[in-house]
Amino acid sequence: MSAPPGGAAEPAEPVADGLRQRAVRGVLWNAVEKWSVRLSTLIGFVVLGNLLTPEAFGVVALAMTFISLLTTVTDAGFAAYLIQLRRLTDASTSTAFYTSSAMALVLAGILAAAAPLISGWLDTPELERVIPALAVALVIAGLSSVPATLLRRELRFKELAVRQVAATVLSVAVAVGLALAGAGVWALVGQTLVRSVVALVVLWATSDFRPRRLFDRTEARAMTSYGSKSVVVHLGNQVNSEGQTFLIGALAGPVALGYWAIASRLVNVVVEVCTSIIGTVANPVFARLQGDGQRLARALGTAMALAALVTVPVLVCLSLTSREVVPAVFGSQWVPAAALAAIVTVRGVLRSLSGFGASVLMATGHPSAELVATATLVVVQLSLVALFHDDLVVMAVALTVGTGLTIPIRIVQLRRLLGVPLRTYAATASVLLAAGVAAAAVLGVQELAQLQGAGYVVMAVVVGGVVYAGAVLLVSRPVVADLLDMVRPALARRRGRRAVPAGQG
Image 1 (cartoon, one colour):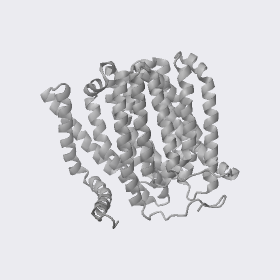
Image 2 (tube, helix red, strand yellow):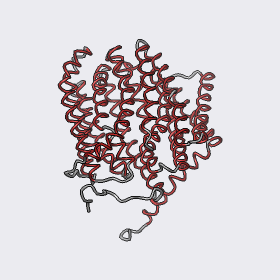
Image 3 (cartoon, one colour):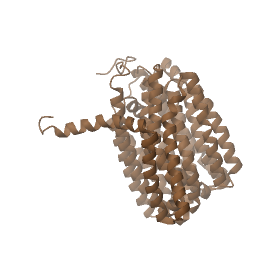
Image 4 (cartoon, helix red, strand yellow):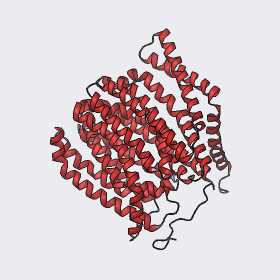
């Protein structure tokens, strides 16, 4: 039964009731989503990488910088506001929906009209047609923001998983078909649009949210007050990542951008599959724990350590083997991207771990503090791109060092604002130590054996995996115990359901 206009849309919920169990289920469903999505994306990525040119990837990456930036603006920080709000009303959700949808429509129209100017400015003729087509995805993002946010807030990651898996599988199939038909850059455009449309349809089919005829000016002002800070933070992150893409494309050309895009996407696939499985669930959990400093610090430490346990060894292995893996998987035309991937993976480790601190600051109502770290990172990293764009490898090294600056900044902020002690990060440090030992073992064996090609890759995986597992059991046993404690109840419930005879469940 729906609430009256302006009334509560959901009952107040005690913070601790079932939160851990719901979070674990959220992590498991998020894992299903990320692994399914990224596996199908990776398959399509490999096929498209062999069928399309670096220039095609560069053109779409350049166009998507505008879409990504404006998508952040259309959200206006309302998603972050709705997640951290202790009690939702129909007025707040409907006001957020109408505002974000209207902004998306207006900004998409402006972007499409500006496409000829952008194309001439960047001396990339294909953008004149590609940008208006991709602007449709911006409108769809505006229509999707609020219902998707409400599902995340409620930890309903099963519905979100179904949405993303269906959208990704269909979009990859369409993109590969278009590429085989010789569509070139339009294969990548089609992939983006099909993914957006399918995701929108599935989202509205599974979400309970339906906007009411409500627009509360008071609620809108409250959202804007919080959201303006939040959107600046998210926009800063987008300016940082998309600004780098834009500068590389504008200063070094679409081919160089294609190499950078492939290296970055390869790393992002790993981070999405590993870190974001926990990170996506952790954000609403952090919001529900605001005001409980001890539990919040414990949740932060556990989330970082579990993410590192899976993500760090994969990224380290990719860094050690990228010179062999990238050309073998994507083709010889991508050899320049291999050296970039080796460095970008290290940066991926730093970004994935730093992101948890950012989530805590945003979820606990401290967007101004996160803005300081974000602004510092934007200024430093865009300056580095402008200085070193002539040599992508040197630029990648400089950006990795710059990314490392955010970690001590956020540690200090979390300690000062929320009282998060330094011991919170001890478990994560132990995982990094284990990964470092494994990397040293791989390099030591390679120094003796001097392996090449597939032989080196197999050695790196086997030796690195065995040494890492042993080192983790020695120095990171509590992290493994936390992982097992989280998984056991879910597995026990699953076994219990299977044991129920048919007709008695």
